[in-house]
Image 1: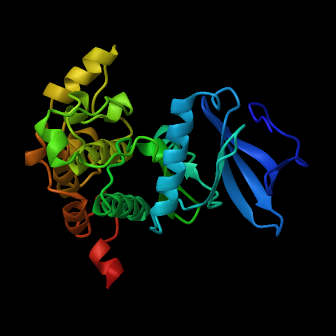
Image 2 (image 1 turned 45 degrees about the vertical axis):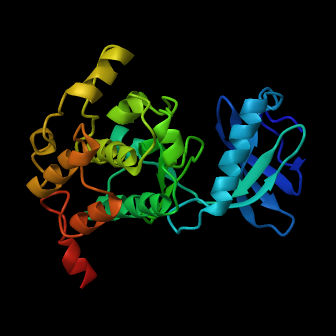
Amino acid sequence: MATDLNLPGDDWIGNYRYIRTLHQGQNSSVMEVVDKGGRRFVMKQLLASKSGVASERRAFEFEAKLGSELRHPNLIKVYEYVKDKTQPFFVMDYFPSTHLRLYVAKPDQYKLPPGRLHWMVEQAAAALAYMHDKGWIHRDVKPENIIVNRSGEVRVIDYALAMRPFGALKKLFGGKAPRQGTLSYLSPEQIRCEPPSPSADVYSFGITCYELACGRQPFRANSANELLNKHLREMPTPLATMNKAVTPEYSDLVMRMLKKKPADRISNLHEFQSLFSRIRIFKDDPDPQADRA
């Protein structure tokens, strides 16, 4: 059944009844559905206009299978992948939420209680650290790919660009990774098409942490080339300078994540978690250590 357009509520896609469209993208539709037992899920279905493209089908199937392989409370779980000849789809957790972009773009509308952002960042870091432990690099970390519900529970989403680190043989023969991802969050090594590594996610997550704390990305430019050059060569204004409410400790931690050379950054997201657990983001946040006690 083609779903380039919205479906009426009495239509079925496989064993799931369509309720409403949550997001209509260029390649897929994301919909709320219910199964025959009345349980809610989210379905992602490849558009009919893309289903005949072999590369699109492969990428879609990869995302579904990786989502079913990964099991972490802060990652969206994929329950079923249906390799339909007309339009493949996969079914995921129903998690009513919004992405973190809205918390940046509309801070007056999406206000957070003191300490809530700390918990949200902590959960996102845990999800990415788990992916790295399982041998995957996300490669597209940004506020749009971190969703949060009203209680502050977080899920990291969208595994379409995920890759494993290159093996020794591929590195030996100069293997390169495709330059993929969102320009405002690309690490210098992604720009140079170097082999994927967790340090790239550390950088992109650092950009995200910077933006969440001050409301803007560290680099702005009038062209894509100018923006990429800033990632490669320019150090951002310290976060504590951009927002006086940010603690020096958090500012220093984020700035370490944004170092140009991977070796100069914090070593991994487990180190980030350890350091972050002891510091506040904002000066009026509660002490995270006291919360744990």
